[in-house]
Structure formats: structure tokens, C-alpha cells
Length: 114
Image 1 (cartoon, rainbow, N blue to C red):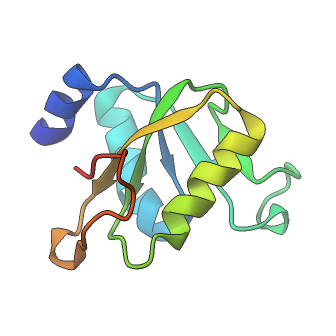
Image 2 (cartoon, rainbow, N blue to C red):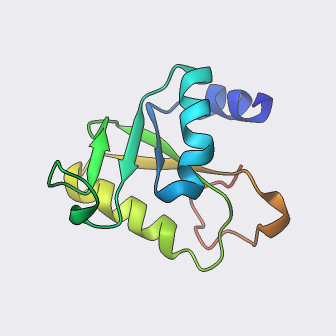
């Protein structure tokens, strides 16, 4: 938590984005502790009754992604593409991985991994 607060001071963000249960496991408590809104990216439109892949603060200008680890980067790419499709000005400023034992080098050169 301390590391994330320090990161936020240098790299301000408006929301926390996540997908699936692995992201939700930490996104909800972080949202509460930091007083930040969420962006939930569904795997498909059928996964919810809103008829949209996104729920939450879709208008966020800067956000971080919370997940357990990066294996291939497909999940991170899906999250960023989904948010960009709804909000062209949105920018991912960081990726917060809570299971460091599985972390690989970030395939995302311009996005820091926390």
C-alpha cells in the first residue's frame, strides 16, 4: 500500500482498472483504502446486465491496472483496449501486480510495473 501511495504522488491517477476475480481480489480493497473509483472490464458483454464491457468511472483520464501477475500481457492489452474504445483520452500510467512471485519483465515499455 505504501508503495502504491508513493507511486500515486509521482504519477497521479483517477481510477483503478481490473478484470476478473484476480483483479477484483485487490481492486476493491485498494479502491476503498485510497478513496478511488473503479473501472471493471468484463470479459464479454454477456457477463453483465448493462450491455457494456465497462462499468465504473469510464471517464477517467489516468488509471492503473491491478492484477495478480503478467504472463503473456493479453489481459493487460484487453483492459487497455477496452478502456480506450470507450474513452480515447484515457491513459494507463501503471500496472500494480500483487503477486510478485510470478512477475515477468513488463512487455509494456512505457507503463511502469509497481
